[in-house]
Image (tube, rainbow, N blue to C red; front, side, top):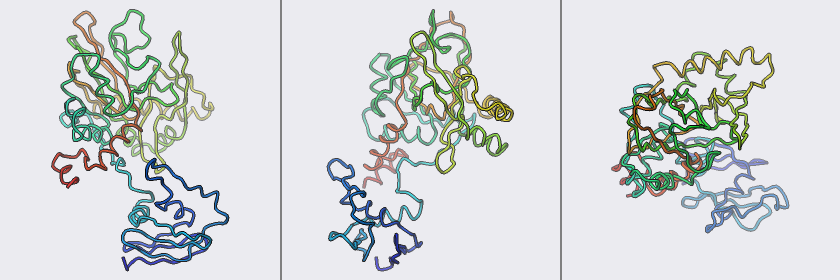
Length: 383
């Protein structure tokens, strides 16, 4: 590309691309050389701390799709993908296939929930890409055609990522128990919450396989916590800032375990975008923020909880045998209406994987051309 220019500075150089002129630090450029990554292990094999002096470029040119950089104190030139420089110039970081914008939803989302069969998820790359993309975009999806067996759920989960254990073990059964360790194991209503905030790293993706449901009542409740958080930010920026800026304590205690952790009620990333929420009043410990902070924190906290109970956000549906609801436990707030315990049987089997595994699976599929948008678009991407 003859229209790329290079302007050498003391600590870096300005690369003039067709759409912009962007400054790149010399250390960063030296680290970005393709020879720094082992082609077999995909791990970095270059250690910048071993350089005898700070790198300084003496020449630069474009060779096909690479920027070739000569260094003052090194005989070997570096080769940096031009596409990488273009991506960083445009968005500040390399392209990530899993950085898909979230689609926030309200109480009318049920007809639009992505539904994909278990056979498609476990047997085809297109089906697995559809599920993983939906979980990144919408935070929730339904897998249909689940067989009524103990092997069905682990087979589904392992298509997305390794099973993440919790205090309950690898799996848990949501049904009425004589001596329950969790309010979910009763027939009473279950308030809106995210699971296991008392763990330092709460599970990222939850699977709930409905094996039987013939009871009266017991509708499942789901809310897009990110949508509520964004609504709070618009309506009350100060309340949003309090919930996003302070950590509060949660627990999960019983006879054989005692988990404790601090979490932010509203999770944001480095760009300030909402990435999720953490809420669970039945697992919330005594607030340990300074008492003066609580004067403003409590009203903000309770306002957020009340907003999640508003009809505009609340999606209801009845869990059906053979379906598995899969959702982002750091974004989707869920609960349950009470039901009549002796009116039938209700049995959901659950487990978790983490969000890192979800995104890893999607990235691998996307690189192979399976984006999960539509079968036709995936076919075009691979062509």
